[in-house]
Every structure is written in C-alpha cells, then in structure tokens.
Image 1 (tube, rainbow, N blue to C red):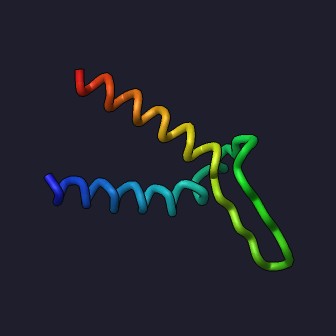
Image 2 (image 1 turned 120 degrees about the vertical axis):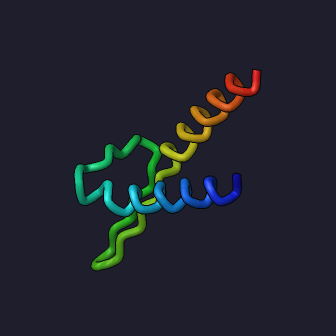
Length: 64
C-alpha cells in the first residue's frame, strides 16, 4: 500500500509541474502571490483549504 501511495504522490507531483505549462491554473481569491523584480512567490492558501475540505468529505464518506 505504501508503494502505491508513493507512486500516487510522484504522479501528483509530475502533474503539478506540468499543469501550469498546459493551461493556466485558476487562482482563488485568497491565494498569496508576491512579485518583486525577478522573484515570484506563490502560495495557494485558499486552494489548499478547499482541497483539504474536499478530501476530508470524500474520505469521511468512504469510511462509512
């Protein structure tokens, strides 16, 4: 099971790297974006909270 979980994480990581090049990922109003010169910092705070909520709901429904 740990091997499958590791492979899943690798796949998600590769998709995360490839997704911005394929299409523009929508930014939610709550995501942090700081641009100064040639430095860009992006932290998807609202996206993380929404994803956490969705995964919590899915896993709680699967547990029942």
